[in-house]
Amino acid sequence: MYHLLKEAIVTHIQYGRRTPLVLAYTDEISYFSNRKNVAAPVELNTFQEKVQHAVAQCNKCKTTEKNIIHGGDASSGIMIILNPPSMLSSVEKKVLKPDVDTMLDKMMKAIGVHVKACYVTHMIKCESQRELPGTMFSHCQNLLAKEIELVKPQIIIVMGEMRPLQKIVKNSSGIQWFNIEHPITLLKNPELKKPAWNTLKLVKTVLDGK
Image (cartoon, rainbow, N blue to C red; front, side, top):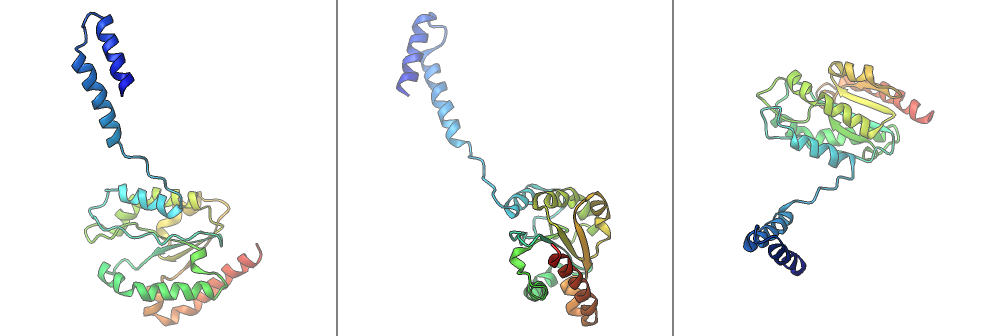
């Protein structure tokens, strides 16, 4: 700070008092004060942090409630996209979440994969009762495509309705896609567990062939 004050005095003398000394000094104080108030950029290291940050910045839907990205290190090469039944309320989703997590863990263990080695995310990033699912996904579509680009999975398992993802599927390359019912649907309809298991066996075949 001393050398800056010295420069201000020299300038004041050399230029015939064109710049008031107090103003020059005040400007230097202001400059450093403002620099202290500038927040350092947040370092985002994981897929989960990057996506969660992007979701937090989005305000396209009329909601303040954001789905938490489960994340995972994707070391298995598997990405799981959850798309729960559209008629399910956010309250019911919260009540069933522990059961969903337990079933998801069991499903992955059945094919020799730990769920933490999968990257788990949501097709729709927010919870809103004031937006239609189709509208919400139209807002999330680019974000999900970017998420896939970041994770670079070899296999994507869509749990739930897959139809909204057709554009992303069409534009993806080098990824094998599989579709099974969402764990909530399987919990409510146990007869659907067998077809889901048959699909998971196909996933295991791909993993074993890697």
